[in-house]
Image 1 (cartoon, rainbow, N blue to C red):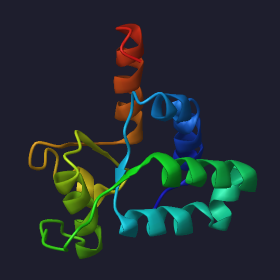
Image 2 (cartoon, one colour):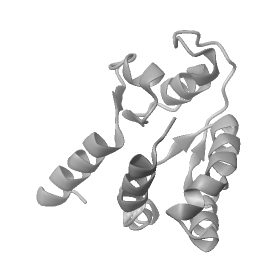
Image 3 (cartoon, rainbow, N blue to C red):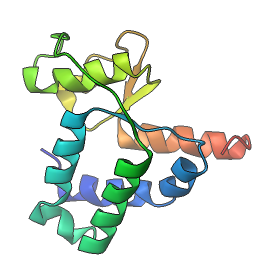
Length: 136
């Protein structure tokens, strides 16, 4: 479960990522299942404390327009929470470098088949380092 401080932190992290996505500097790899989950979760009442409905819809629109959709076959069964296996499979099939999550059931698997599983704060640190090096 994500507490309100994490929700607020996640909101701050998203600020500015849209430019990197639109500029092709950051690629979002996602499955249909993840799109559905993100859409459902972001529209929950608790996120309205941190995002306006327009901001949520704008972010979802960006993801729908720019993300690379990966087909999954539900063949991965390595997570202790079986409902999260599709996230691992999406990363593997999509050849992602990172899985960014706050989910402890996923974080304990780091690294997973060459993918780094990191939290939002670590992702922000990586983004800041890339900016310092002029790569973003």
